[in-house]
Each structure stands twice: as C-alpha cells, then as structure tokens.
Figure 1: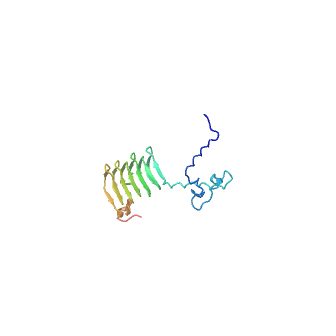
Figure 2 (figure 1 turned 90 degrees about the vertical axis):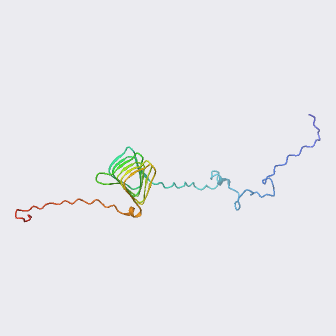
Figure 3 (figure 1 turned 30 degrees about the vertical axis):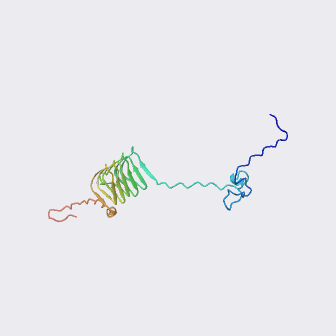
Length: 203
C-alpha cells in the first residue's frame, strides 16, 4: 500500500467517561466520608509491614440443652431418675421421676411397678409409645397419634392427637397439677398380748 509521507496521523479515541478520569472529581470519590487512604499493609493483615490485623474472634456457640437418651435395646427395672430432658425408647418397669421433660418414644414400653401405681412423675411428658400406669406432671402431657395410655392423668394441660388410645381418668388444671399425690399409707402390724387363765395380762 502506498503511504503519503506527510499524511496526518489519526487522532486517538477519546477515553470513556468515568469519574476516575475526570480531574474535577476528587480522588476519594468512592471513599466513605471521614476516611483517608487505606494502608496497604493493614489491608493485607500485617504481612507486608503494615499494622497487625485485629485478632479473629469466633462467635460463641449457642447453648444446647442436654438430653439423655435411653435406646430401644435398654431395659430398666426400678425407679429411674434424671435431671435434664430424657428420651426413653426402651422399656422401663417401675417409675420415671424428674423435674424435666420426658419423651416416650414410639418403641418404648413404660409399666408401673408392682409397688407403685404411678409410672411417670415429671414436669412434662410427650408420649409416643405405650404407658401402663398413672402419669402425674406439673405442666403438660401430650399424647401423640401413636400413644397408648392405660392409666389416669393429672396435669395442668393435656393434648391428645387423633389416633391416640387413652383408657383412664383425666384431671386437668393448675389446681390438679399443684396438688400433691398422697403417699400410700404404711401397713400397721399389731402384736397380740398373751393372757393367763385368770384374765390378767402377762408382762
């Protein structure tokens, strides 16, 4: 191609409009008010001679309530006491007592012992399995659809889902939950005093 020696050179294309190319726009156009230039060393966490970065503080883990579990392959005979919440999926023959919440799993079988009529005495109870015996709670009893309860219930509140089996009496209300269950009176034994033929008591 032939070129003219004195041909004028084309003018360069104008730069796109941008606040960073405009001399009238201050250099801290994108900087929040009241902040100066960012220290590169500080931005890199102190690896390049800048100020040390603030130490990392892990967020505190949320408190998790302790819950004990009695699996389906565990059997207990006697009085079972616990302090925190308890999930029972095994078998218990006796009495379960606590100030916490008891959950009776779908595989659980709870039976009151021979010497006691009460099977469960807790703050609240959620029943999914089978309970034979009385239930006494200070707050709430919930019978799930799979629950089978043969016994009386004493509670402040009760919830019975459709499908649950409940055979017994129910006493619900704050007064009923606050009432103490009378203990079984002890049997008194009397000893006969021998007498002589004259009707006098022998010492």
